[in-house]
Image 1 (tube, rainbow over the protein chains, first blue to last red):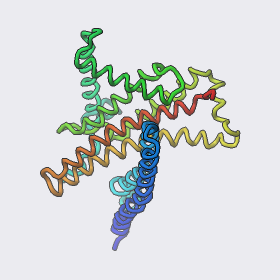
Image 2 (image 1 turned 45 degrees about the vertical axis):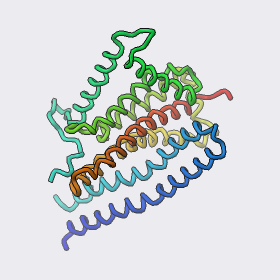
Image 3 (image 1 turned 30 degrees about the vertical axis):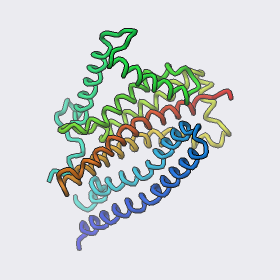
Image 4 (image 1 turned 180 degrees about the horizontal axis):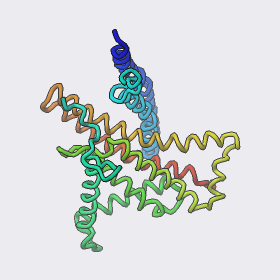
Length: 88
Length: 221
């Protein structure tokens, strides 16, 4: 195996791991946030407007962590800076 | 293999400036919005027509949302924030038209939007409470947190841009990859999901900008 093959195969593995691990945490967090919000709405239906707005903003903030992982995976796959060291 | 054409491609260049197809789509979206608004506001009346009623409902919803979050006159931010909301919303949905590329699936576009939101935060903060009054919020609760405030200024702007970009690009990519695997009919549910995500992301972009603006304004409570 030459150096280029090693870098490319490790990059693919790294991208897969980034998506798997980076998706796990936010998925759990999103589920928990939604559960809590539904719980709160069931208890206090008159406050549902406020809860839903906070839920949307919070979910966007949580989801952005998964999105960062996705962007990193894209960089690894399509704009890998490390291949530049191997291929002159 | 044209599966990677979710990324922007340069159509032509004016000197060092590359005009990509996402930029051209943005122009198209702008023309569409201006045309719609011109046609709808040509004959304004107290008894509103159908289109006028839709526009009024949109603006009233915006005003109400802003009033709930911001302890200021909502019309201070409605013109700017409403423009951002509508432009991002239309841009997110523009990719659904065949042949057009989602403008917000280009990091340059979303970074421009995020920089607008960044400057808006400071301009409104300074305009409402003066330079000194605005800078005071950096030392809350203590001076020790000043570096973190400064870091947050940069990271939250970058996060705004990357969030919108990542969401839109992932939607496009899922559609294209599925199209490569199964073809007919299966990508449609994902496109429907993409519509919802596009609208929600436009909403969230505006709401987060609002929250940042409100964070720079000291409430008297």
